[in-house]
Length: 379
Image (cartoon, rainbow, N blue to C red; front, side, top):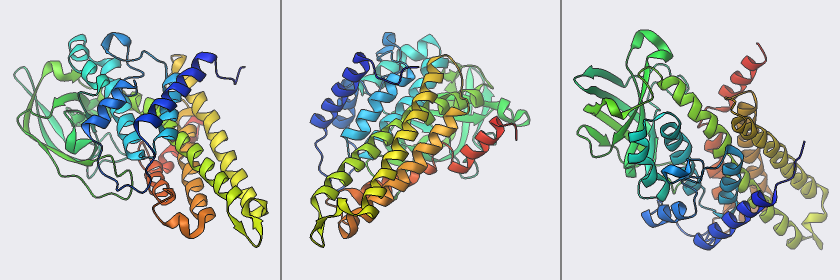
């Protein structure tokens, strides 16, 4: 059992981190605007939008663990966590279902643009009545000559307001439960696709999110990902990628915030002493380090499982739970450690807190992860 990175992995991480820091200089006090197309193409040039996509379709051909290392470097080097999240959702929830289950024509037609940063993808799954319960989708797809007709409303689509393509899921047989869900790729310009305005969110401000409505939207048979009825399985497969690799970006954020806290504790003086000399401060920093290193081990194990050809096992929900809850607790600790400065914008600590709150909600809430772990235990 070897816990060390190889020279190649170390070089991959360092090159990505250097490229991210050069491309996205840290300006914590800048107003949080949505990412630009230029930002997106830079991510494509750095290989971050297609890291795990096969090389033949414009990707990097990396496995889950190496992809996670790149996302970890992105999260550490870029303080715009909304951009980190947008890129990860694009890759893991949209590109990977197409790469793993799409037809050759679909892969050739869509993936090169997604990897290069020419296309932005949005994952359209969540509905007003279907968040955690994804087997009961109100959006329907009815059979038509040569394809399907989609109708219904997706309520929360990351990248939705600016997406060029949507990976969406619809009920094609309501009597079949999760076996009656089908996955589709839908072009933004298709008749009957109505993107909504950006939602006002607590955090992840650089990532625009909004609803999308399908009104008698015709999609051809060749736009089905996999086979009709496989949508539930395809979505859960993408969640294996997302719950593992996406949260590597939050490991990077946790490292970045911990670095800031250590630097602050060494330089800040109260009562004639550096605050790092107070046990209340040093122990808080020790707990932050414990959380991130424990979560890192679980995330790497989950990625290793994917690379061995396995499916989502107990390590995937364990990893997602440990990273999301740990980074949220550490961000709150960082605010406390910085005191009044932590509540102000210039240091970026309050932004880190706001950006970590949704981590315990999306990709399955923390309670859903606990349910998955309980099922793995046979409960």
